[in-house]
Length: 462
Ligand code: NAD
Image (cartoon, rainbow, N blue to C red):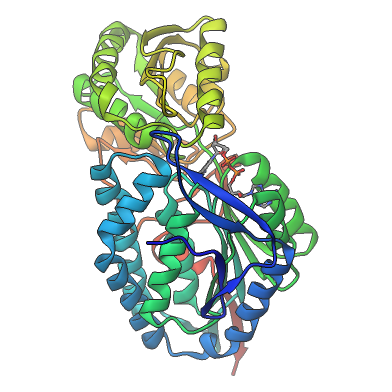
């Protein structure tokens, strides 16, 4: 795809009002791969107006028709799967096979799930003498991060369209080309003009203008906690709906009865995947003190295998940030058993897959989201201790529990303050609600729960 030098507004690519540009770099070789316009408040305003104008007709479109159009969008994503994978690889640096399977594959699954849900969801229900109508909230401002560029877009746009909302998307600065490709796919699918609009630009300029715009009814944001708090405050002041998907520091709890080798290997793979840039990554591995040394050895060996297979992190700032955390871990007394802060090569934003042993729960690397290929092994004395450590951060997004039988793991998972837990390696479910307890966020994405975020209720009594 050739990058567009305009914004996708009201069904067409239009010249940007903002005069700046954003150069996208390939994290593998630090070379430019494209340039997009940096939109300003005027671009955002034009996009919100287009979305408002399209709202009455889109919200009145029968759900089956909306479903058919989301299905057509899914088909366009399937048709352009290779191009999506290549674009994500160019912007994010992820290995091509991973881009194909995950960065392109998962959004296809999710858009397919919303094509089905739009057709089958009960948009009205009878409660006593009332009929409750589930109506679209209105215009959605979607602000997305770079870590899973297309997934984060589809997670918001597909349910919003299924609900009958119209959307203005402001994607991350690092990965706007994938967003442009998505806009092309939406256009090709026949999504009506104004229903989906794209404004590329800087967070504090275009992102902020979108979050503050009075024509936006719901702001759905995924990204850092710092920006999420600001967006939540802005939305709160305007009594506007807000959905926040912020970071995590998820615990991988390996109970004494578990298959240790399997739990450690899957746990390390979970963190190294996407070079550690996954909000739900199990970055804290909790191991019983009796099996701790064995787990450390297994984790170090597992991480060593990853070296050449993981891609770089997204940009120089993230690379410096992750390396800074690794140095901080050493300063605070943790022990590196694989990897380290040094860059493995001169060119590209690479970070070594790193494993820390002797990490205590209060250390910075056990409390803050690093967003890089770094896993911390923490020892626990007994189950109560494990639970206290697992629940002992401000976050609560995901997690894992391993035990000899599922029932034991489930009993533990039920006591964890977190939104999702994989039991003995349970696999990703695109219909399961995803979102945070505590400071990991507000609201849920995926499946019927994700759709409900874009609906409001009206009760008629008769
Ligand atoms: P960020 O929060 O700055 O960016 C996310 C999105 O918000 C981008 O589209 C950005 O342009 C926009 N944005 C930035 N400032 C804004 C503002 N003032 N108003 C409105 N929108 C704004 O995240 P980042 O700097 O790209 O990454 C920093 C850290 O965030 C990472 O190291 C990681 O810890 C965390 N993060 C979490 C997730 C997640 O999925 N939860 C994703 C990416 C990053």
